[in-house]
Amino acid sequence: VAYELTAEEAEGENPRKDRFRQDPQAYGPQGDKDDYKHSGWDRGHMAPAADFKWSEEAMDETYYFTNICPQNTQLNTGDWKELEEQCRRWAVKYGSLYIVCGPVVQENRHGTLGRNKVVIPDKFYKVVLIPIAGQWHGAGFLFDNPPKRKSRISGKPPVKRPLKSYIVDMEELEKMAGIEFFPELDADIKMLSL
Image (cartoon, rainbow, N blue to C red; front, side, top):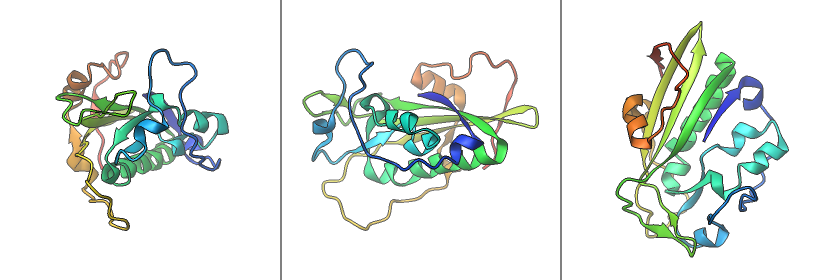
């Protein structure tokens, strides 16, 4: 998933509506609600609904299963969510930023879930690029997607780590993802300070 997030978009006000459904424009099989039911995995957004509160239609489209991956609950409600919130704060502070994120499947250590055999990612990455004072600043983040817990303990808060502990080299992420994130960018990218 790749998109620009502006300050105005980050401060949108449309309410969240959890309407997970299949993407009508996608070809081939995709996950559905039944795949996740009682699986122990969260339906984790790649492009978070809160980044699209500026438009009811745009937010609604973040609930397509083409934007959703099986994600460990502690990650989804913990440090992944913290980075999503930090990106919105950066958008407000600097006016805009660019985000590229997605799943990484290496060993496929978690297998698949449901009748649609939705692949459970081993990791997730997010790359952030921000124009600050005429220079590009960026950082790449890599999160492990730990195994699901055998039972959910309600009320237990997610484990928190500093976001800077997830920073990895962007070239390493490009190799892992098989994507050149910003191919048209000629300038050097300075490390984003946290």
